Image 1 (cartoon, rainbow over the protein chains, first blue to last red):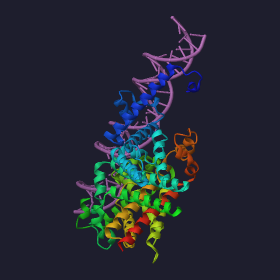
Image 2: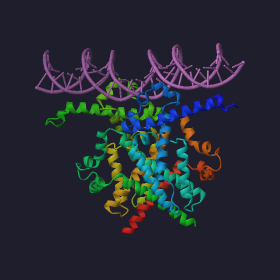
Image 3: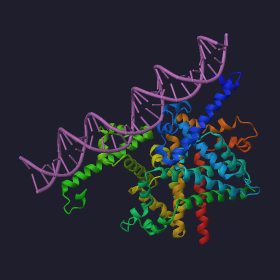
Image 4: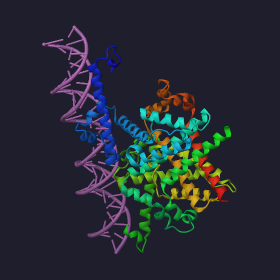
Length: 236
Length: 236
DNA sequence: CGGTGTTGTCAACGCTGTTGACAACTTTGT
DNA sequence: ACAAAGTTGTCAACAGCGTTGACAACACCG
């Protein structure tokens, strides 16, 4: 560690650090795939070690603890997300850019629920996260909002999307049995209740069972975008 | 179990079931306080048993598994929440009712982060949850929205508030050290970066560090309420 | 009073993240 | 080129977790 800042960075040393870097990347990728295949509960240090044909404790040479590994995995997922979003086309309306971003955030949560569930409330501090923040901020800034309002809506957008996507991700990591129970809760609970106790709920059973989470997600995103647009128009 | 539906419910039997019911309540209350005191990680079956001066495995006579216990605890927290919300005053505007509800949901997440974090994406199926659903649905129905739209906005409101409150709850359950790191991430990361790489983020550092989560929460809630109001006005 | 079902205890299983000692090997300094 | 220093990996082990099954003590029913 101390030698990192030493004056002579020999080529040999560089080689070593590159080797270590590569191993870190390999571990992150393996962890990503393991979590995707076996779920959040399946991602344990011992199983990851097995996957890499390495003793589990060796991983502690690459990451301080499991948390650090998870954050690295999440940043990797964000990098994939960014690649899918791609370049912002010339002249694209800022709201459409944000809609595309929201769509990819949702897709990541659905595709990799294990990782999303474990880190949706966290800050990875990794490079991919930084680029994502830059992209969203930049997009809101295009709307003509003040600096203060830009930040306010950036956070509202980011927290709302991550929070809602996190919910569906957490749910997806639970036992399939529990998921089924959760999905059927409306009919299970309200359909067989005395009429007088929960009249409003009973009156809306059909609608309650018919709605899906993605619709809700889009509605909240649109609500935030509409609020941003209105505030932008007011200040103009 | 089979005797529940038997014809003769003897008084003795009732006494026994009441005793068991009382113990369940006591366990839930103790778990609630334990989680509040020692955090989510501190709520283990063994420690809860210790608290109740009972062997840990005895708890499995009252709850199928830890998950069932947690859901009961969460429903208890919701019951407290409902009590704080109290009666809806005659003539209160539906938006103000929802603002009060959102405020109490936030307060619960801040006050009992451990429980909120563990179950924010779940359905407890308990009585308190049912009453909460009824209350929110009823309130949105007052706005004049269609049945379909009422349900749509009910879910948007519930999912958004629980999702955002869940984030802050999850964060609060982590090590204080990590929390501090997370809170300081803006200054830590962006302040010491080459100017060209993340220009928008750098330009907004002051605003990024100044904002707080409650402001974001209120902004999203207001955005959803405004959307509901607009849709209600359109259909009228 | 004997049979039956409930309540609580105990030991144990398999799993987790994590630590520290120790060996094998690479790179560095002289 | 050779010893010193540092890195990488293995192994055994620890403390803790949720959970199960066998068994004793007790309360209640007929």
